[in-house]
Image (tube, rainbow, N blue to C red; front, side, top):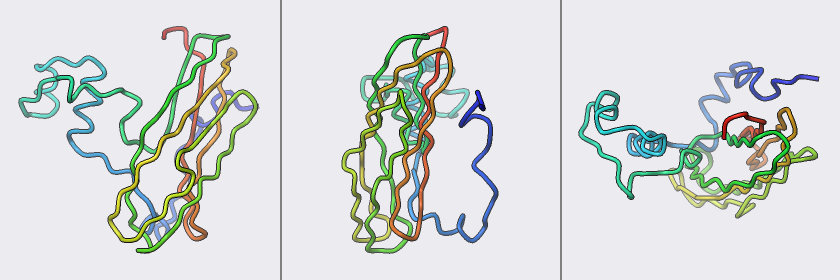
Length: 169
């Protein structure tokens, strides 16, 4: 029994051929990270140190930390509590121009994962499509991990989904 679950290993053995053709990517630009930092409560002075620009946090740039367009999903709650969170993500097609990806969800007991839409149909390279992942978890004193895989029959784009107990909410 591995208590560290998804946090116990990296992304896996590097396969250069597959790395060069991932199928889908989760793009994140400068403004995405500014929204993330604003959501963390960074001040304009702190933002300037990091970005070397005069960004200020506003309603427009104050994004939810969990909505950084990152390929993993993490949520926490105090031990013995349940939590539900909705994550918004956008993927960019860098594989076949015309491709259809189906969501494959691995949800162990204690984790409920819903993906909308559950099918992403691309018509061109560079096309972006958005989806939401709703995760509900009954958190005991440890960690529960599952995954979301976008599969087009050629590429499998895997994202870990982790819910863990935290003493600080």
